[in-house]
Length: 414
Image 1 (spheres, rainbow, N blue to C red):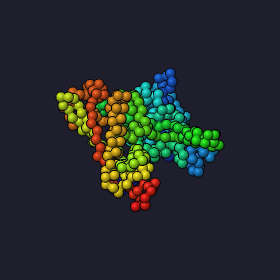
Image 2: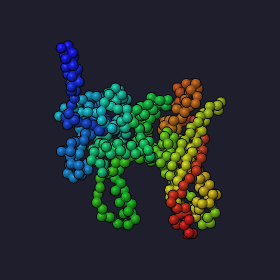
Image 3: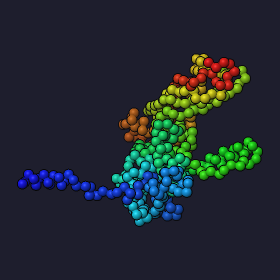
Image 4: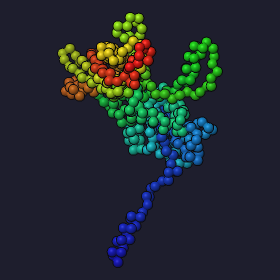
């Protein structure tokens, strides 16, 4: 009898269901969250993007096209992030679920006035994941989350896909929640994140075509496009500046990898009598940038060396002969000089304009000279703009694509 009772108790435990389960259709799953500063107020505005069910949004609709949306937007105000999030619950018949949030968008005014007040909530709340993307906008986060993305039913998923692609290739360095705040707490207290913008690309292109045509063109007006091409730089929890498209590309060479970026330069083939110059484009297949510091009585010297293997992507130089070793060597030298110039411009931007060590000088000094760094660190903000440097590049063109000579070359194609 006792054995039978024991068996029944075990069966009871094994067949018990989850006491705190919730049906999926009773949850409002947040995929993106935005934070803005309300003008003239200490309160913040939280905006969330929530995908709707298939019944409410047809699979055939793309975002707001076709008369309906596949997502909804909720807004709430609060004196803190947690308070604003709690007020979201009174607008929805479903429980707000943040554990599937992929992206956090910070508005311009909030980023410039300081993001410190939301850090504790982001770090403490178990529903926010360290793998969430952090992006900044030059507008409000609300505008970004309300913007449809072409070919995507839910814009938050499209934004997540864009940043995943940037992890492998792209000019902008994607930044997740963990890496962003690790850098803010690092030696230089400087971090960065991609800048999301809304640009009227169609209008810009139309204006250029109208200038060429000399008359207005009959074209259909299209909505603004969401783009990511610049980088926002933070220092001591505040956004202090923005890197443009070219600077963002070179910045990635310092902090991540040059792989996947394209370099354009003007080039005149050696021995060409007419002096005709063409534009050369090379694609970095693989590469690495080494930053090695030296400390002496004269001060700190940073040695930056970039090694890269390139593919000849496009050439407009009609006299270029890529099968000629001397010609190829000359082209590699020109590319190396162009890279050195770009590296120097990026260092000048960080030192003289931003006064923010977004190029990892402090981290490398700490790694190579941990004892000396303890003395340097307290005055690093004043030391960084005066640090001397030397840049060099080792470039190798390992491929020319499917053809050798340029398409415009007058001779036979090899």
